[in-house]
Image (cartoon, rainbow, N blue to C red):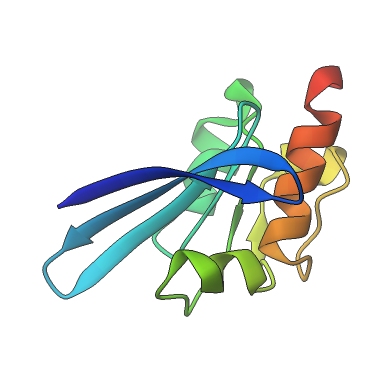
Length: 106
């Protein structure tokens, strides 16, 4: 089952996506300019093979719900995210706010 729904992060609307798979659930929250995701996100692929796409993304591991993804510290971020002020250790919701607020300058 796939569930997409708008959620609010400090007055900004973002989209949460949950994909129920056997024995796991993929979680992502997206803005117009970037996204955060659960541990299934392949950061090496984004940073190395897809570097030319300049993807702004972060990953949090050990999360099982959208709420946990918002509250969890990101353990890895893309190189492009670092250029936008998003760092490992930053809460998911704070990274999303940077994506929303600074997205105009991407």
